[in-house]
Image 1 (cartoon, helix red, strand yellow):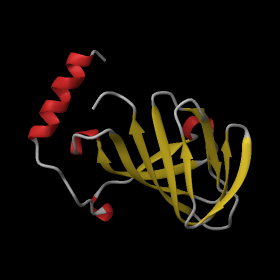
Image 2: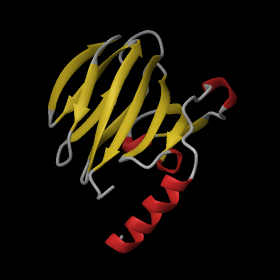
Image 3: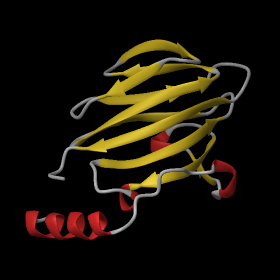
Length: 137
């Protein structure tokens, strides 16, 4: 995207009112099967998108990964992605290294890195996913 288009988009977003609260129960849930080449379904609700404010945040998702499901390992370029685990247990692969995670853990995948997640617990994993772009705001 050219910088003039980016600046025009930012100016347009700045003119809109900022949405400060998202009621997750009122937002439709979307199911994806084999996300990024993972196994099984995941469900998410897009609570906020880049259209909701002028800053660099691309989206905030409320995500549920059922037991046995996974998000396949994939790379990030030009954005960082943050997982904030609310409940559940999983194994996160971050740059080819596996790490156990549980409620209260935060995982940051910076631009130029790769990550994936496998719910190997007995209950659904619930997390917030925040993607922050590196483009010119």
